[in-house]
Length: 282
Image (cartoon, rainbow, N blue to C red; front, side):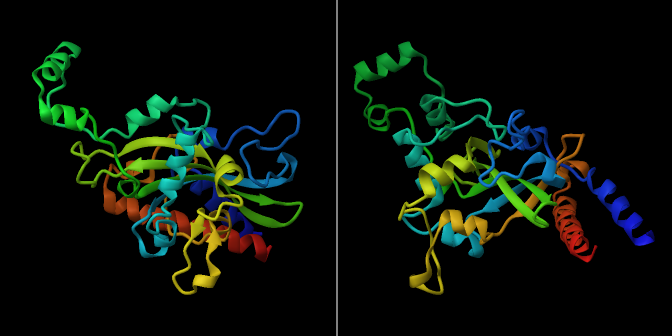
């Protein structure tokens, strides 16, 4: 009983670690009629969920473990962006997946910022009439490419299904990010391109698509579909937020100190691992 009490105390403390309301909302309230989360690829009925936490993970596609998701000409960002252009995939403003973006808004998020002065419509017309070759060649705009967007967020629920006695990582949304350290990003501030429903990605982009490839660096005969790779957790990531009432990132809890934020992320991962261990012990 003493050990169980310690575990419960640890869980109560872990709820204050961190997260954002975006992730909470992305964890979608189960459908009132069915009791299932409409955003889930493999939904579990709400009456069967014994425990659940919302988690936001950051991924750097340049990391060695993530390069199979970012192989040349098969970049996951290329696959997603091309699907948006074709109208097969819906971009959303954030990972709550409630506000859809238009294709023009999506393109606007992909614009590379410039330190050139913003021209009025009248000034643009004057430059065109004067035959300004540099302005005419650039078209006045530059966009980020597939390989510029090497950072992503995964929004997911970690839940325990008491009916099947199984712990699930239920990915709900994928968000493409403009990295703050990208040379083209002169603002040096992380920017959000768009969020996407993971369920829609699996059903409309990954499934039966030979281009949706996780590249096996050890064996060319054992490449996998991206949906299978995510199911098998064949990627590297770190925890940015864990659901909490303060709507705070782990880094923010420690005054914006990046090093303390990294240690807090590692600690949160250890707490989750320990909780999973105790589930099987009891």
